[in-house]
Length: 357
Image (cartoon, rainbow, N blue to C red; front, side, top):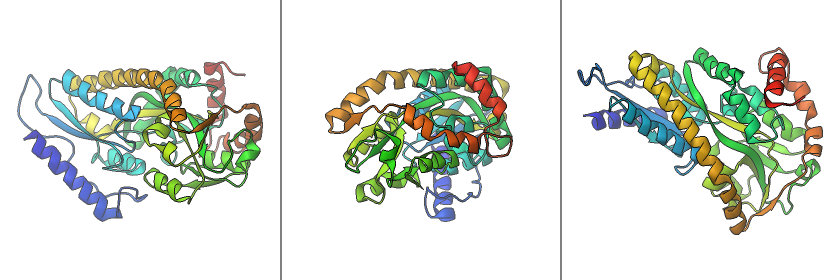
């Protein structure tokens, strides 16, 4: 019965996505599906209902964050004694990042993972992660994620109908390109058409360095690189490797310009529909899955660089000082008290947490 309901739910959502917008990469809001993510099955082990969830991930199955969500699903089933079952859909099979967020808001999708940058159009609370060269390494980013400030960021997602359980991560973002030169200094980006997320801070950072930032849905990126529609892209090693960008890009410049934290999220409506004991299960499983994913990612990153080099990518490690200087104006533009900006008070707290002046 559980599998039939899950299949019916998935088919209903896929039909709604396809008929409502013509594909999974739409920027438009979808109509809610009939299901609310629950199935009444009677009492079992003290629980009055069995809850059938679906999770959406934009990245490929072997991406660490997708593996982390699969670990979350495994822990949910195990710790709930089978009362919570979650099917995981990867590679944007079910929804783009934006559609996933909107799906969680209306409870047609119960869980999702994505970089915090994808939430920029929904909340300002995670914008600080997008400031260029704020974090020198992943360890500094993790300090913020695990701090009281990080917990407040997760709690703020309640305001948009989503519950944040913890932070996984994609890692530090780097640049790949196929323009006959590695990126050694900001001037090397002059005239390069680079795909970015639809994030104003990211776009401004590349613009002030002379590049031509071009927002594009992630699902279109590989083909655009392959056909030469764009010259470059920027992503963590986890995405570069799992998406096989080495097949269509020559140079990898380890710029580490942004730390990509990735909140593990569930629909607040789905979470609130659970009894208290199963809410505790979700909280515990979520935190364990986040720890597991970070460890998985850390072990893999060194091997990925070796694999990419063996596959023919030319890897360089530019000095960051010139890039930091070139992007200072981004802070002037996007740090302030207005909507769509990082508050100065928050930035000061972040500096203190990560040990920067």
